[in-house]
Image (cartoon, rainbow over all chains, first blue to last red; front, side, top):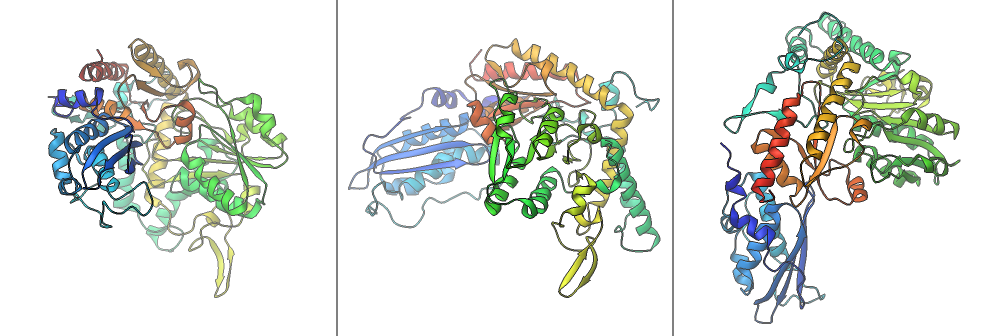
Length: 147
Length: 417
């Protein structure tokens, strides 16, 4: 029996074909790009973080498999407008749960690419020295990723 | 399998009886359709048996002891060197170096020949279709020695642009290092002509035969190349063993690369003298059992006849092209079926290669997805990732039908059909 539909569910394909906030963030203050060197998937996260620490705008762009791109769309939709603390508290496990479909360890990496990009982006101000919105500690409880 | 001489055509169903892994059923009820042979091939009982027999009856280190087992092991190891010599028609066994694989073979030349002979401004000519293993070692060498890399371009349909060869071969060109068959496009390059023209220009020639040795007869005497590299694991043998061929007069004059045991004649506290060929390039304990099992793989291929293997793959490739070209949304990269080896690399419109491989796998079909260690080639073709089906002597036309069905299924899942 095939369980293709478990991974490529309707809502996954919907995000893949009609993504939320795919493109450029007009007033971006923070950005970070992550790549998976094994498969070439790329996700860039751009965020406009206001002085109160809110992600006023959140966008992604990238290229890669359905899982990497659809999960980025889901993540951006979920955390757009949220605060930095809410982003930091959004764990890798939360990301996998948000995606929904069960994934093998290799495909979990595809799913977590945008999550890693976002967690790094909130520490990556575009203007040098603007550390107001972040601490120097990487955040987001990571999964113990296997390869 | 019959051993009554090489048959004119292969019977893949009889051959499959020799490969236990090919009867695998996965994901509940999907028979394994193994189409990832350009990455690594499967092993017949004869090769697995040779490994087992080696470990159960003959194993000891080679060239070391004078005890009985060591002599047995050494004899088998050296008999395999002779099998490899005959397999590629080299002049003498001293020209056959066992290495861990194609990558190690190429790196050996880059280090030994390259460091000894290249000076700033010297040029190495490669092509745009090279595997990273025939690109990165030369980049590293260029950085060490101040040499310059040049790259023969390709046409949109995956052929080398030979018109530019004379222009790219300059008086500074010291080496042309080229793949014989592209691991992505399947293009069979005119290596004999290129070798001749490179020699006319005063350059040495290294042939990356990783995708050639398993599939087509090789004759280094006729080819005239100076170095040639291939791997055991792409030709029914174990991983961990490969071959470096080099013309004796050239290898003889080169310094050793790796230092250690076996590669010396004598050692004092502050100096050593290197051993003669081939030991000079086989420092440390070699891949003894894998090399001997590679000998069994060569026996197996010789028994079938590489020309028959090739004809079988031609049939599979033409069938695959006809089938895939008939599916809307499939684009095959590289030359027409008549002009290439058993490698069919394709993209599906609107579906990323990793999703293709994932969905094909759910139907039991194993293909490779990604850049196949050829990022510059993919940049040239304007694609980030592709899917690759690659064939070998045990694949059947029915399996290609299953590939076609699995592609249709993937398109269905992605709502493209």
